[in-house]
Length: 189
Ligand SMILES: Cc1cc2nc3c(=O)[nH]c(=O)nc-3n(C[C@H](O)[C@H](O)[C@H](O)COP(=O)(O)O)c2cc1C
Image (cartoon, rainbow, N blue to C red; front, side, top):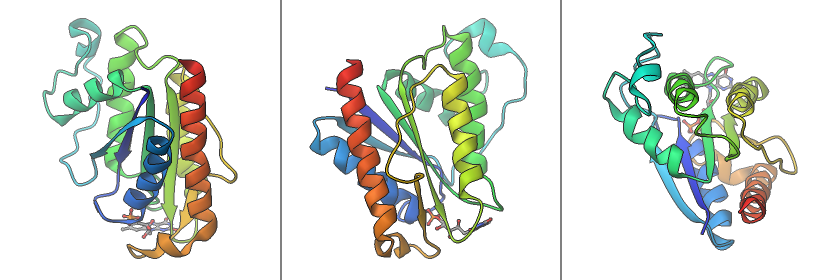
């Protein structure tokens, strides 16, 4: 059974990003995938300090915080779905730290994310979501991952928690994304 790991980069575990990710996971689970949600937003963030230790110790970061546990989950998953709200036209610092630190750990660990599925979703009030999506997708594309599409870019227009439920097109986009992740996971074996 393929495994799908969603990582919520919003500090709000009941916010729009979390509910968007839940829609994706629901569709994956309906199509026979095992799913898990990881709440990253709100955790203490330490960025990559470019010490190079991951190149020597392999499979983990010298800073032994939550990132090492998350890396193991990512390394075990068949699909990784990153979710970030738009913050000043960009991703949240939690998602950026995940990209920089697990990105480097995985490269030094035999390109561990190679040929996994990578998908990104973004909540936005008004502007900046395409840039946020691009940033997350750059991570997948340099990590030798496979990126599925949907019926629109993977965003929903939402300000307050709960607004996502009123964005019919956003919901449709998340549903199709979940179906495509499961479809691809089955074919990639
Ligand atoms: C610090 C901060 C910066 C934000 N910057 C933007 C922005 O640049 N563009 C935008 O459209 N919305 C912006 N927003 C609104 C959020 O993206 C929006 O409320 C989103 O739905 C929050 O997702 P969440 O409920 O998952 O936390 C910002 C919100 C915060 C708290």
